[in-house]
Image 1 (cartoon, helix red, strand yellow):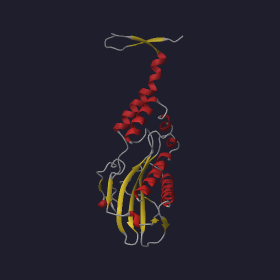
Image 2: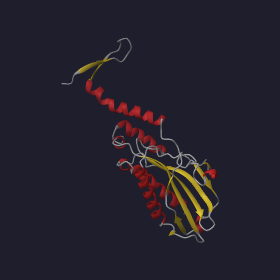
Image 3: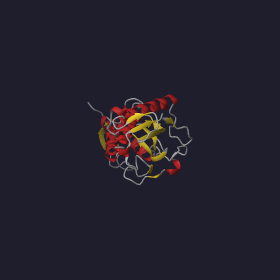
Image 4: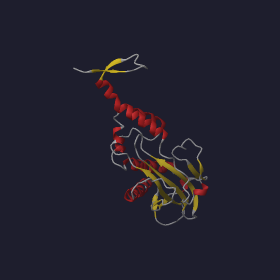
Length: 241
């Protein structure tokens, strides 16, 4: 038999209503998650910056296009990418500048992400280019710099997909194209040169993360950042077609 307790709903003892204790307790996790959602909206992860130590930093300008949420800074020139059929992928650099956005991420985690970025971009670009090692006509040079990353929050990132309030928050973020609750991300710069002339053709800063409803990307501390790398590599291949 369920025990009833009195819960005041008005001021000065007026308007008391008897409700089962189990109903009140059941609301607590949702209320807690709702409060955390509010905190996340107010204290979301900082947006990328035009990192001062990047070679193209002085040429980057705020992006005014529709994709500015994920690519806040960009430099571009008129290029017919179809004239290029080879690409050199330089080793990924882990950005050492004081304006990096790694937080307290460990050095081994940074290295793991940099290696993953190297392999993903190289493999995905093979579908469009011959991957080369020497400058030549019709050849691009790609320089990737890992400038920041955030890990998934252990347990909570997965829990948020099953909690009612967390699911609601992630659903809204999915529609907006925003980050999921407690999930990680990756930030990096892309600089594309004409390899033979060593002329900068395009550069941008981007922040990538999985879809807010992607449960798989919440499993493992670096899973979301790695999914962001995969998405970024796919997007670059599409841009260069």
